[in-house]
Amino acid sequence: MIPLRHTHNPITVPWVTRVLVLLNVLVFAWQFASPRMDVILVGKFSFVPARMFHPQLYGTSLLVASSTLLTSLFLHGGFVHLIGNMLYLWIFGRSVEDRLGHGRYLAFYLASGAIGNLAQAFAFQNSEMPTIGASGCIAGVLGAFLILFPRARVVTLLPLIVYWGLAEIPALLFLPIWFALQFLNGWMAVASPGTGHEMATVAWWAHIGGFAFGLLFAFWWKGRMIIPTTSEER
Image (cartoon, rainbow, N blue to C red):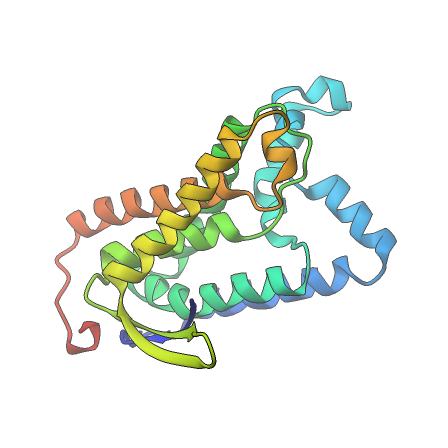
């Protein structure tokens, strides 16, 4: 399912979302300027669970290893990885930014990514596979969107058997389905015998952790605010 837009129209200009998209694109261009640059950036700035739990074995400190919880959020593994994340960020991030405010939204975005990486780390503490990408951040945004705009509908492109179709899917259906797929794959990665995570190419638990944090944060935030219901949220 490929989301194209949703029925909530933000009021404020989404400056933070725009800057985040631009920054991710610029880092991606820098990362893939040459194969050597890609290796250098991923090697230094990606998040590696084993490096955080055993920094001395990697000749680094806990502080430096922990900083990659954030730096890894701006690296991506390829064009499809980048475009997928930025599509979801652009579609859902603008409304969450509109509701939370620019500064709070930025802090929430980064916290979602860091917590997503921590969830991945605790699921696979000895993994030496680099974790990169904004997926944990995006998952947090999706979790928050589900709570803040439960009545919104997501215009979705569906790959049918012989053609592509469009459908308006309620956020209350679209986002739980998305999360269920992440959880299923995450459980299968943990349950896999032997190498488990080393056989996976997607940090499923970063998605799960980010989404759970987004839900909890939005529950807390919504409880503090009296939010009027608008016709755009239908």
